[in-house]
Image: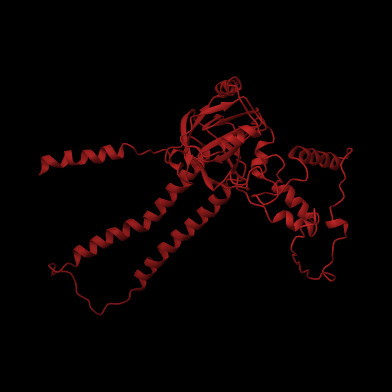
Length: 392
């Protein structure tokens, strides 16, 4: 049997050849700190697990039935010294794990900007962060570089030793953005923005993927991540600008349609307001953005007439696209376009800085009426009547 034992292990070797140790050997400082947290926590737990496993085997061997020399004490039920060891050791481990986890949870908060490039190298004023806007699509990843005016699909690049600020959202369902060599995963959710701060320290080609099941094409939702030096990243941006193609709203609406195993590609230009429109669910022209709706609600909403506007609100990009109101599936129409809203926001910002603000900043009140007070508010009952055929 001995000569067959080694060949029997060969299939196991082939199976293990597909394993990747990138989590324990990352290329980014955030991922390295998370690795250290994982290793230290495991070692602390092993301080209890290993002795317990060893003592289990020892007691089973020492007090076996055939060992007549082992003392037989059927009335023994308590030992103060043993109780102190049994309870104090795990308690100390739990205290250490709690302190370690609390510190790590706050220091490695993905929303917290990084304070160092790597151990011993703090972030300096000369380290301008790279902003990357990430959109999880069905079933591919869109990356927008607002500082460079380019975009890419399933292809991400970042310079070495430069902080990266990810702004992440989704076009349809919840997903999870994960680059094991760079940092931990974080969810991408429609209508919401999550953030991730990280840095890549070692140049190379790495893999990112979706870590949350999101439908039929989930298994092919991978992308390449390139850690490049400064000149290499500049070349990557130049290649993107020379690739041609513009990612405007119309092109995005075609891109977001479900597709599987999409090849990597780049866009020479991108609509500067695209990410904000995706985040606020208003890429379609004329559709009310969620931030616009919330702003109206804060200022007093649109009165009772505004109730009818919210009834047909549904974010179904394919069944409801193109119809505003009527019997067909519909969505809430925008009071102003996204460009007009952005211009108004800029005007408001200029006004807050002491410069002339050309827009009217008076709060919106429903139907021109003053805001009702809590004492005077009375419930209102709405009645529907049949439509008169003679009415136009």
